Length: 112
Image 1 (cartoon, rainbow, N blue to C red):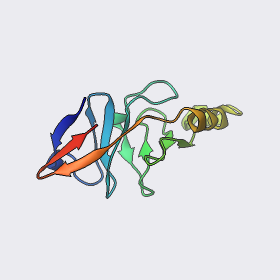
Image 2: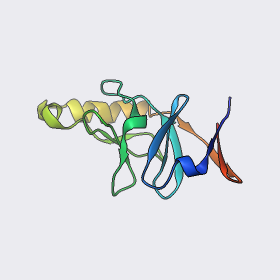
Image 3: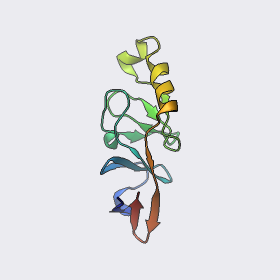
Image 4: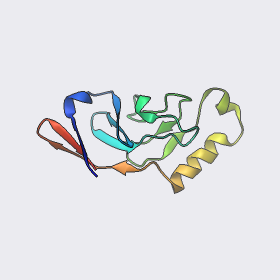
């Protein structure tokens, strides 16, 4: 099922929720599954860092939006738990965030 949103609702550097996707603009539009692998935070409330990665709003896990893989594990107190970050990064190599396709059609973005 596809969804349409105005491209203007996703200015560069922002992330919004569209159905089951976190849709963002890091210079390119992207759509990834919106549930963090760590504690299931809504990634639509996340941010985009200087590397163009999606950062979880709860504990700072960082995702490559092109692959859906976690490239940095949870931060804060969770970063002190031996092996936790490595375990989640390994999990997302096997089961990355789902990725949708985005096509710009006039002033809208079509997300599948």
